[in-house]
Length: 94
Image (cartoon, rainbow, N blue to C red; front, top):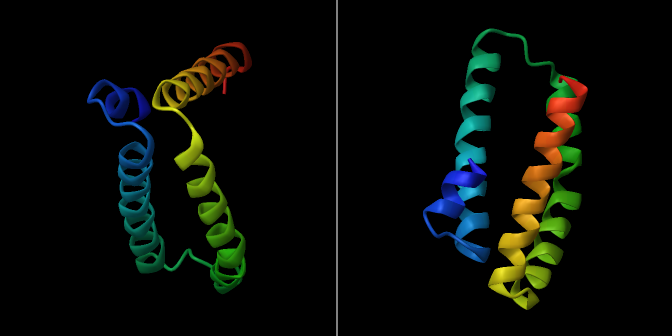
């Protein structure tokens, strides 16, 4: 989704928020499907909930870093990550 969000002009907080919302919708849908099919183990749910404090801390630290990052640098970092991920995909064949 990243290239579409960047092409639309979303940067920094708007980009991260939109990406986060789309990810939440995707994962809630998966949880409903897996839960409905009874393939979601209780241990997986407990493990996910145990990770919540680390996720909250990471979001807080990321927001502080994002506020200090210039918009152009943000776009360059996202584009660099996309290039690296695409290269790994092509070379690794995953």
